Image 1: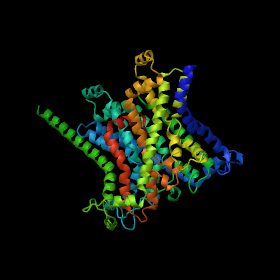
Image 2 (image 1 turned 135 degrees about the horizontal axis):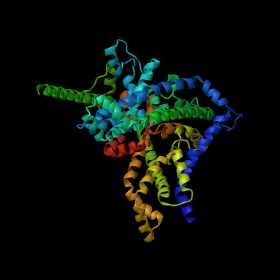
Image 3 (image 1 turned 60 degrees about the vertical axis):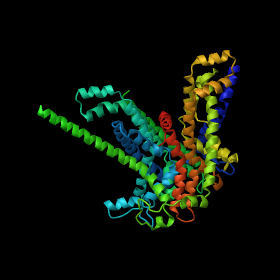
Image 4 (image 1 turned 45 degrees about the vertical axis):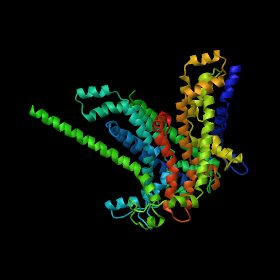
Length: 295
Length: 288
């Protein structure tokens, strides 16, 4: 009995904070999402039902945010995973300068997304005074320059994808490099004796051996990409609806706060829809990985 | 015989080619990573006049100046943003470490009823995305009148299930014999925790602290929701404010000076604790 009380006291701070800021909100978000016509000021609502969901699902801003998020996911997850794999394979095959390269590659992880996003914006932006750094390159290949920040949709999506890949790559390179490093040298030696081609070694030994980590990265990559937000703010500013570059998470925050805010019920409905999407994709990923991953 | 050496030569040449290609590829990506940093540094030392007269931006400057750093501090409350972020980071990390140590100790060392169930419930919390709980937390903090206060900024992020888990695993590796010996000597549990376990677990504690510092320094979403007075902004919000409302005019060099100053502390921290940070992140940090 005395022991129980003592342990409870040690756990108390964690229990209080997790209870107030994680467990209670989890129940509360469900409640919010079904309360119709919720008024933040008076904390009253007019009824219970699915109207928040149907409002969100018909809101053009939400549909735009869903479209943007899906395009971003479909581009950045394969590109970043593939690029990370290629770079990690390269890193793993060298000895000289390996540490230096690894250090450099990790830098984006410790940088402030908003701050470096500002640099990306400057690099890609076209103003009346200057075409900007990237447009110098564009002009080498085609005649016309593009404003990537305030211009056509696909130009903006391209910058957002590039920046997202730049930000997420350090984590993926780190994980894959250590996974590749832990593949036993014996397997490679055996393959060499058998005279296997390097493609065969790669597809029959390397990929199966690192497949658990590869799937881990793909799953967390999907989850992370679906939650994209800060990168877009960094490039296009806080009014993402006006820029046409909002994401689902951005939509949730816009419903909560700022000029368009004050609608926690809509925000909750959108958050639960996002959760349903991410959950479904993760389950599908896990089912595929169970079939494919070599354990 | 001759044929074989020929083949060997060919394989050798191929190997050199592959190696060269590998280095070129790696160098290209290193450049892609470093270029934005170079560009922010470069733009921050170009004078306002020089920067704006370059229709085609120059890759170097002949007359570097520090005037932008002066105007970044003078024309925006940058010093205030830094101070706020520092206070926020230190307090959050400190409180989080205390909460984590106490909880990890209870799970690793103490016996109590329902321990396994409580721990399983803790682990289950790890799967809850921040986006689901942030809405209510925003309402909670707002109705508690804690907007634009450090309490409101700090309290929701001081309990981290993942770090509790990490530290508990570490604590459990400390041999039972030490605990039994301490009990024989009549040492209290709390004294044992402070005098024996914390020193042994120091490397893990430092790793957790550094990861939390990085997270705090870069946090943007919660501070944005909870602060709207400029005097309470953290650096991320400060940068966003500078981006949207500028320094009165489109002063890109001064913006870049601010960006350099915001980025520098973490880059220095990273270079000092490189191995520890990378190991800590590979254990379970995710970004993106």
